[in-house]
Image 1 (cartoon, rainbow, N blue to C red):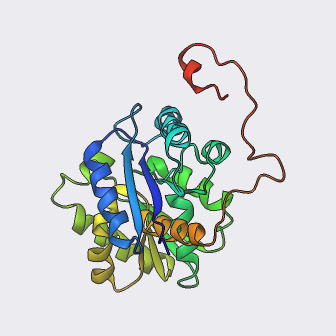
Image 2 (image 1 turned 90 degrees about the horizontal axis):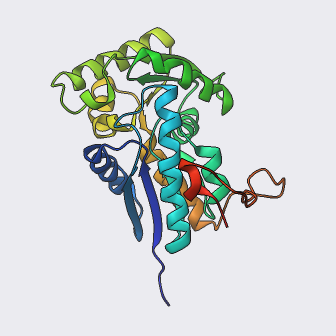
Length: 250
């Protein structure tokens, strides 16, 4: 009997290759046996995603990654490794396999680990987007607070104080919010998950790891995005003009 390998494509929606390596390591650390992690850096867009503008300009590149894989060698699942979950609904329209965002994945896992959770993210300007996603995914009751460390995304790996700042922020979030778990609000924090969890003595959820686990389970169950309502069916073929010319389907 041939044992098939599950392929999960983890897409870094920003263009920082070093962050892709960090994300890939976090994904492979939790991948089940016979699961291949294919990590891809967005070929175009911002080097970090810290605003609505960044998210909008990151979406075309990550969609191009998925549409190209669908044409050549489709994955069994796609993970969008940015806490804003940019382009998620659009990605579900063009992928034949399930697509998950890391914020979505982390919220689901955190909601099963206690009465409530807190989110600790990078810059305070991203708190509104995180709050929007909490509500959109239906976790307003479980999410007890969203907190910023004021560390820019690209500084997470270079600031020698990142670990201590993040740990202190997570500990304070637990105390202030009365939460049972912490969700890390950036894929660039993935390598600090175990360190912070050990220091604060509470579950700390990285969306990259959570997303890989969920996608692997979905693949094992043979699941895919439903299209019965028509909303997530493949978009109609039409002409795209100007820069989006190559994004036309069909």
